[in-house]
Image (cartoon, rainbow, N blue to C red; front, side, top):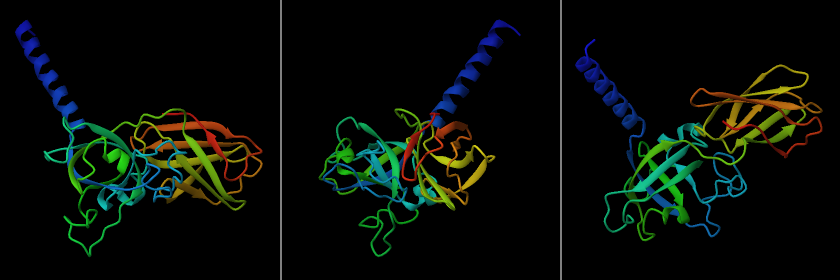
Length: 251
């Protein structure tokens, strides 16, 4: 291959990489509103089951998603970069963005028009934000604003957190503080006297199985939406108790 041909091939490959990168970071259009909360968080017990959002570190940067985005709870924990666009009165200058974590479901209201109250009616893509997060991208006087959004990696401090609940015949775990994709699509649990046991999604990011793990150290295997799997061994000691939270590894 001559030098000219090699250079030409290199430019083609470089352009292909640029196109791929552009597609990965492609912005999509949606709308956003906010709900007033005095503590700065959108809700304290949302459809993802995270409970107090400040304790789970999501806090004011939490969002409720419309039906099509929520995807029956599988989007819980996913991170989105959102910016206000195309509105000279409501969008802040320069269109700054904010990173949000999906923590709740914004239910449809088919009794209202999609552009007046029925923000989350299917198939609209909509984010219901906290007032504090909304104020980072738009004027509070904006009732509903046009936005662009894209999925981004979740930046978390510390490891995955496992909050166990249930009873001697029913074991449940809530998984929070998930990095990488943020979305958990598969969970397995293992006691010191069992093999790996697949868990089923109960709701949001609560996972369950019918097993008695009392008195056994517990390990978890978590699979993210990218397909990457992470195992955290002996996260909970043999004397663990229901309602306790334990920290594992991070993606």
